[in-house]
Image 1 (cartoon, rainbow, N blue to C red):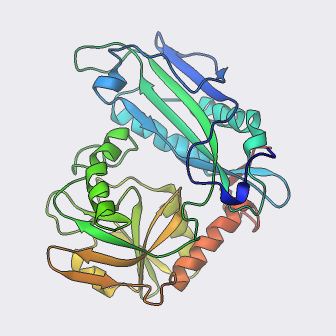
Image 2: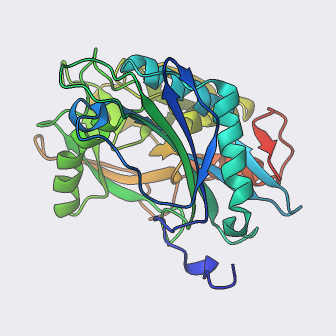
Length: 339
């Protein structure tokens, strides 16, 4: 693709050649189909439009120095996708269909895979929604599974940089016994008001608290939260947090770096004791946090006082990226070669 400026590619949507589709009808999944259209025809009474039957995943493929194209822990995404579908009573996509659709989408859009060293990736978006018509509140009988891809630049143009966040007390992303632990669109819709308010106030994102007691750290915008202190990598325990595959990977890397790891409740007051804090997810891998502001109490929890990411966060970031790009041996079996 000679007309793509890889060095200035934004983190956004760019049309590619093909997307892969598969319908669930009459109690079974059909054959994979290819389409060059960016649109779908959907019934006006489809459950996705009325009752929120929709789930998605986010993944990346990377071209390595050796020219090979790798995907990262796709089977974890496949498993989480099935859990999300089950959580809102949709048909579950079998792992073999999930994999075949992803492999096909990558290979058929190979010319859009960014070159090695451009700090870019091919973003992969599997999505599924209820297409069957229902007026009563019940699951659809028909579903559409789609995989589309798009080349994306770095989440932050300036590279990995610390940002300011604000604690959100007046809005909840998800209820403790709700859908926070699965990747469905409703969770993100519920977070938009809080995130937009934070952006308008000059913050990069929000730190959500637990919905029940407002005492503990929950999600960090659309990502997982982590804190580092006393050579320990700590992440919150909560029934409403989406288990991040990036976070799971960073947890393992931290252990292998000789750190202790803990998954437990993190009270707000503990923010004052961390040496480094950040958010982690597929898009940015790690977003270091410079300040967390609690407007209600007037407290400001400060990190990265020199304006640079903490040394442990930076080490974890580079280690994970090296594995994803094939720059270091993948001793964990996390990557699969597609091309």
